[in-house]
Image (cartoon, rainbow, N blue to C red):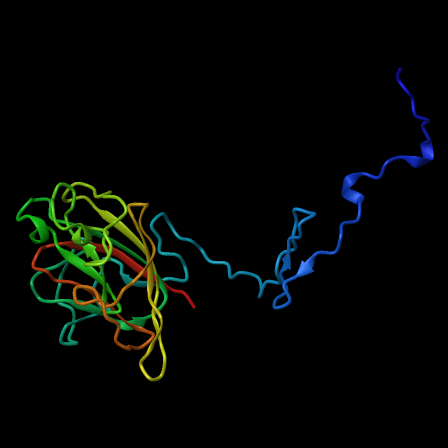
Length: 258
């Protein structure tokens, strides 16, 4: 038997979106409201302010808030390893390693987003670490390896995309010799106490040709040596390595992350 309940026009059910929900609880130490066990919502934290609007620029950048380190015209933002003018060859919008030594930026950097494009020689010469070798040495200490690793066997933590001597890349996504490779690097510098003690290790994320190859890894110390930290300034120059191979560079820019 079906029982029909009486209908009262004045007792129309309240839509669910108008029902009052129990007051959510805060965490007690910030303005963010924590989700409770009875509802699947929480309030957004109080934000510090409206984000700064920037122009992202063309594909590959630079965005409007970037510092351009090399735009294909000259190496005026760089010095050689004796703090004189950088002497790498600049031609047709490209800077090429030419046995004149490492170069480093005039300006020091700490936490940053770095974009850099590089290409190993098209002519295959040498093997292992002797083929298309250079390096991007963050703060003059922590190297992201540059190497022709397309079909070139070497030790895993020494191939392109590696945090040199510490972490191999997650995948080998190198393009063939002579073709341009792109690194996008997010770096957070280590912090030290006044007495030189390490407070926070450095961390780095690397995308090569748009592919994640280092996922927020912890830098163990100076690369290429025993992984040991030694106190340094929060901001230090960026270096590019001359390993004796004519590796080319272009479109280098950096954003400071404050």
